[in-house]
Image 1: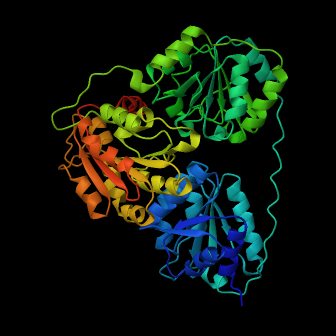
Image 2 (image 1 turned 30 degrees about the vertical axis):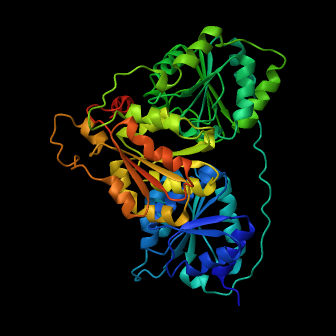
Image 3 (image 1 turned 90 degrees about the horizontal axis):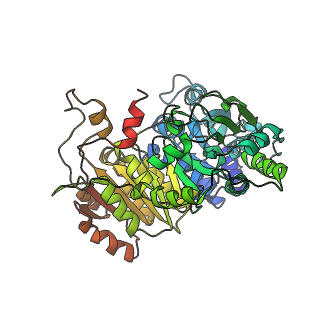
Length: 536
């Protein structure tokens, strides 16, 4: 007999699932083994919270559907923060969630309500249509949705019919009329494009259109790396932005948001775009248009298709737009945060986070993936460490949870083992997630864990100046020793000269993760945090 649990696992494997992440218990034992029997690799995490974020980051980095397999009840609730992050970030994630449907069971939770509460889609497998139900859920995830798939325990044990329904190619979105956008682009003297998460796969058509009209290129933090290497790239708009980026976007007479909702982070609470600018927005989600600010041009459609249609409509016209020798020279010399002069705050026993970030950027290979946790520190690795492309930056900030960075790095490393993966964490996030170092050691992936250790929850320290801070400051902890305890190589860094151990590790096999306990200065809040607090 073939059970429904076996059907679910086999069908997913047949649809091309190559990796699944999770923690196995009685409720997901058989479905996980069926996935493995079908050819998928199962990555066993130390905790469901880490597994959920690994699956999320794997999806973002690989472009494939991430699959999470957990136990019923507490296995699901342990993973909820990661599921919420995936749902809010529109990550293609499929959660295999066993259900105890008897309300008197200790494992019972209202799974449909739980999924709805964090913005995830809920589907349930039925005994007579298991193959069809799991295919429909997988197809929904492919479209960029976090799907919680309920697997009732009694249904899992029932007879199932093994078949593999077709996955039809998605129909293309109908192209909207682009006349208004074309007219605005033709009229603009200083156009700027801001690309967001919804434009991560549209670099080529956006660059072609920008080259035609002379637009400067910027991104939201979620799309960092999209225009890496382009000479007109301003990098991240908003709170992370360099002074030059703020200036040039502020002087733009046309700003077009491509797959970006122009939220408060991307626009510095709507102050970065000048009042004189015409603002356009392109998004395939009609509810996203104008959701955070009024826009003059709203186009509902796929970013790639709209950009290509506008480029075609403009041909053979070309304009210089915002591009001049002076602007290009300024971008080359002032466009990166590392090019902006600063007073080094390093002391005898602590290093300025900017200084250690620049030193690491020079030391690390260009072929890298950067995963950044949340906290006061996060602007330093996000903006001082370069990435080669948009898949090289994993930024799990949709839910703004501390503690997701290490698991993000692990999921990204599974997706791209050919690259060095860098996990940039604060000490708080590191201690929340340190158990996943066991997973990192077990997998033997090339992973560098850099901890910006200020012995505090730095965001709260700087937010609540003038109030008692004993609840958010802590004795200094030897995080390198913790790393070694889990089987990692480790080094403590108080000055750039202490990075020799990292240099030696990079020159070796990198088969054991390296933990860097960077004792950073903490006298001031980061520049981006000052911007963020303006909205609180």
